[in-house]
Length: 296
Image 1 (tube, rainbow, N blue to C red):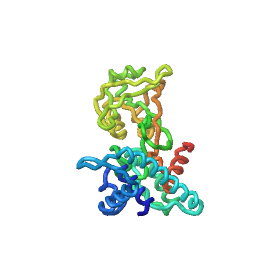
Image 2: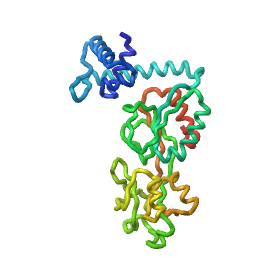
Image 3: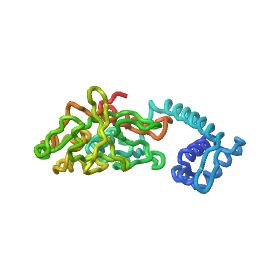
Image 4: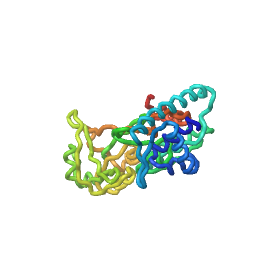
């Protein structure tokens, strides 16, 4: 039994929660995974996993062994990388997921530039505003734009984005300018939804960050859709600066409540685990951080 290979298989099964999913990602038959885990359990003399028709769970011994396996595999990868990094050009395939509008407006030029700088790296990019699972989908990196990270997220910050409240001059001429965030409740509002949940609008008011839960006339999970609805005089919306900039440039929309700035959004690169980062992933993150002016 190759113990490092068996450890790698065990970690992948534990992370995916499925023998079949691990076999698919590792490119082997499910029977190979079953034999490797059985051999590992026999070698250790303990049961690592409990399998039922519905789910797979780790035993107490399995959970403890998983933590040690991750440490050992990290050390092996780090040792190999340290030896090889100076002489190896980053290479291989990268699968990344990016938000639709930000990806098209801001990341496409950067990814094309990255491909020219690193011709030995191939890129597979998925543009979507739907939730994504790094491990289950086999992605190396997700770009997420959010006010904060979720518990357990492993990420590196790439940059920031400002939120802006916008509407057409025509709408404001008809309905008046809100002078305070509380005034928004009397207007037609176009709001962002995340996983079907309407998000509050947050502002800095008198030195404090306050959230306002407001009634929305229209809702969408894409900033470009929100801005386009505002451009058609349907109400006031709040979108990131990379969405608003074209509309503000041609004056079809104008900014509001500039004395009550919303907190910035963070632009993050999410990673599947805190294990050693492959050279090609590190190259992309370092490149994006430099181009977005966010120090490492």
